[in-house]
Length: 227
Image (cartoon, rainbow, N blue to C red):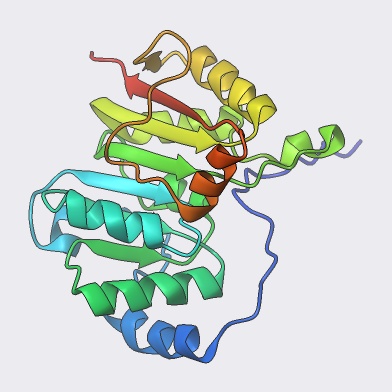
């Protein structure tokens, strides 16, 4: 009798959009400087950035505007962005070049494999997952990023006191985020339920438009338990 096949943890569904000329140009020129090739071996994050600053991982940074804005505001931290889509990677490369940001590196690969193979346990000061694909249809909820196996893996990579910050504008997904993170024994909530948006997370144009129309936005912020 054959053994059941378990689907590996995946952090994305690849739906590659059109890459503009500028995105392609910056992708080609900047990834040689700030890109980190995937390799199944632990990263020395301090050596990668050339200093011993707190390290923040961002999973799925989209077009990178929020990542770049936070990197400017929190210049004392280093940011490792993980994204699979070339248009977004090229866009963040452009922002890094234009703003001369020294504290951003990019891995263009599946975040679950990056976490598993490249990030050592207990090394992250924080992790950001902002507005992941909501997969709104009930039959597609299993495709959502925030699931127990990925959260457990991510929690293990946080240092004691390190935080995991998720945000979504889909209430049903927000409730799932809160439920899944609350069930992870390594994590504890920093609020009674949903958190107030931390000052470091800027409002995106999309988010501002949604708020004007009365749409909600939910932030979930947990910390790795001490000890």
